[in-house]
Length: 302
Length: 302
Image 1 (cartoon, chains in turn brown, cyan):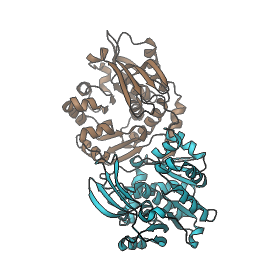
Image 2 (tube, rainbow over the protein chains, first blue to last red; image 1 turned 120 degrees about the vertical axis):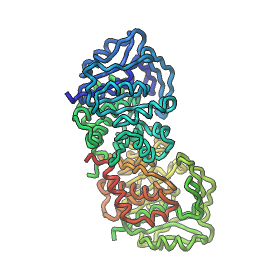
Image 3 (cartoon, rainbow over the protein chains, first blue to last red; image 1 turned 90 degrees about the horizontal axis):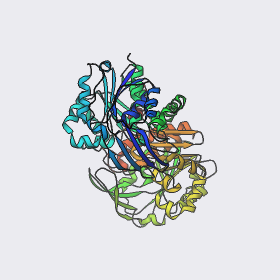
Image 4 (tube, helix red, strand yellow; image 1 turned 135 degrees about the horizontal axis):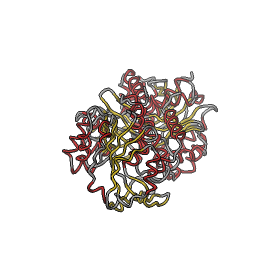
């Protein structure tokens, strides 16, 4: 029963516009991307909330992927919605609208069987809610968490508490800079590690991701892709694939996390080739394995 | 006699301002950075021009590093000078002044013994001059070349000829975009490879560098450094270290070039910790070897 990952975060319906086209009511949200990526490697328990407008086909898709939905709350009201548009070269994105809907009053409650989870990934939500999840867990879980610039700005104290209590913090380089004021990624990393987490991943988008720890320094590269269709959720997909591999192995050693990062990068490379979180769900496992092998060869001197 | 590298390009005196301080009349120029980095691995033949103001101490430093100066022309007039200032986070730099001096009429002439060079690195100069060097070489040399945005803009035809005649083109991602109009690095690379070179390196600064070829795809990461003092010449240092390793091995196989890229990145990581091209000259070989091993471990799953 160790081979499960508990995922807590947002499930959303996204309207997306990129150079490749436009899609409406696409299955989105950080927890969705995480859960689908992780489900390629282990069983997943999902704690999130959706509204009465959440399409049944999305529920079916999640169920088909070994994702346990006993923690997916169906509340009266509308599902969290986000509409965004990307610059043609993906150098920036514009939020066209955000509608919190039932997510505004999300109060994650773990079903009793989830409390003994051994592997947990807290998607980007209010750090106060992430702390509430931690309080419901039995001791000894390996906990990873993501956050975002908004919480660094408006809830620095709760975020500080969260950071001191997680095992692995996963953020991007802008967030690392914002958290510390340091531009050099290794200096920012050293400062964040002093605040509590055993391990820190700093994501750099299409440039790959660093892993920092007391005696650990690792870099997972990114594959140079011929085309990107929709980068939404790429960072969540990376984190989900990573923690899926870690949970599946039952080990949280640095070696497992390194391997997980390469699989996470493989998942992300496949995910950005289509719209929405369900696109990765349709990718054959053989494709993800092939991308993993490509990433290994990419940095091999042989 | 194969273990030599012919380097052609600019030697300059730089005035540099970074957050770490200010230095004047620092030894600079692309060919200088290349030659000093390469000299850590092989003997170097340098073809360049300096003025009557070029300090004797700089000549001595080059001589001390197995750099043959029979192709270093001493012309009447002032040495090429560049003054630049970097933003505090190194995200941009401003050219404060450029004085071409004797470099304006540089017309590279190879001493007769250099014509049979087996390994050549053409630093960034007017592509017409780079072609003139190619015309003086006996057939069979392995030729690498760098260029810059200016030549892509104003001499696209001569640059096209050059690209069709070199074995290895070394540019950065902005230049790859400018050459092709393509934003995706792998698409730009495929297009450039169709123009002639067997191999293409696309540098991404602190994010590492890709190697592209018909059956080759490789990525050399960059070390996350605690402090950068002066990034001037980092790309040239990378190219110089790379071609120094290739020339020293006497082989231009993809495997040698991959290893060379890792040593080039090691040299660049050491070079940016101080001002000017002479800073790397003072770095112990043991430090460069240690950086190389760190880069290997950085992408190792073990």
